[in-house]
Length: 336
Image 1 (tube, rainbow, N blue to C red):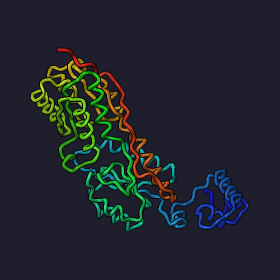
Image 2 (cartoon, one colour; image 1 turned 60 degrees about the vertical axis):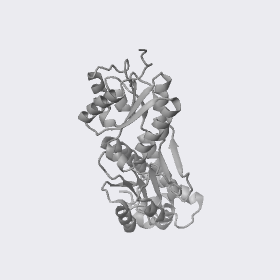
Image 3 (cartoon, rainbow, N blue to C red; image 1 turned 45 degrees about the vertical axis):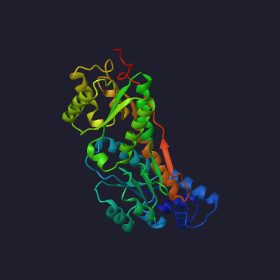
Image 4 (cartoon, rainbow, N blue to C red; image 1 turned 180 degrees about the vertical axis):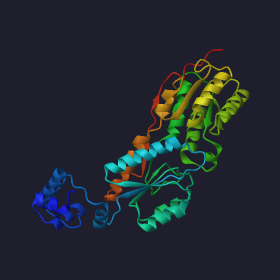
C-alpha cells in the first residue's frame, strides 16, 4: 500500500507538505503542488478516508434523502439514486441513502452528527415541511424537484409542467380533440408531490389553450386499476382519442386494457407517456414519450453540490427542457 511518505519521497518534499497539498489548509507554491499531484498519480496514492476527513474537516459523504412513500415507482427512484452515487464517486464522495419517512427529524439528526457534507433531497412536495429547516442548516443542499416557494434553495429537475404541455401539444397537432391524463396514484397528489402536480398543471393548461376536452384520472399502480380507469374513460369520454400516461407501473397494462376494450393503438387511440426511454421502447407498441433524464439530473445535482462545497455560487433553479421522442403509439386522429 502506497503511503504518504512514499509520495513525499517521490515529490522531493516532506510528508507534511503532501498533507498540506491534499487538505489545502496551508498555502504551498504551485510548482510544489504540481510535483505532489504528479507523484500521487504516478504512485496511485489514495488518502485513507478517516485521515482525509480529519485533514479537511469533511466526511466526503453526501446524504441522498429519498423517503420511500406509498405510490412511488421504486425502479425509477433507484435510477436517480444510482446516477447520484455514480457521480459522487467521480468526485471521491460516498453516498448515505436515507429512505425512511422522517421529515425534519431525520434531516436534523444527520446534520447534527456531522455524518455528511451536504444533502440531496428527492420526492419534493409543493409545500414541503422540510424547507424551513433546510434553509436554516449550514449544510449545502440540492433538491431534485421544485417546491412552490423555492427562493433561497437550489433545485433541479425535468420541467414537468412543460412535459405535460408537450404531450398535449403533440396530440393536438395530430388532430386529437378529446384527451385524458392517466396520472400517478391518488396518494401522490394528496401529498402534493411537486412533479406530479406540475404535469397536471401543464396538461390542463395546454388542453385549455388548444380548446380540447380533457380529464385527469389518478390511477393506482396495478393492472386491475388500469383496467378500471380505461373503462371509466371510455364511459365518460366516448370520443376519447388521445391519452397521456404519467404512471410507469400502469403504462403497459393500460395499453393492453384499451386494446381489450376494442381500441387499436394508434389507429383508434394515440398514447403518449412521461417515462424512462427503456420502458417506452420495450412495449409491444413502442410509446411516444418524454424521457425522464435521471442520469443527467443526478449527475448535475452532485455537480451543483460540489460547486457549493467549493464556495462558489450556483443558480437557484435548473429546469431541464423536455425531449419528446415519437414512436409507434401516436398517429393522426381517425376521421369518423
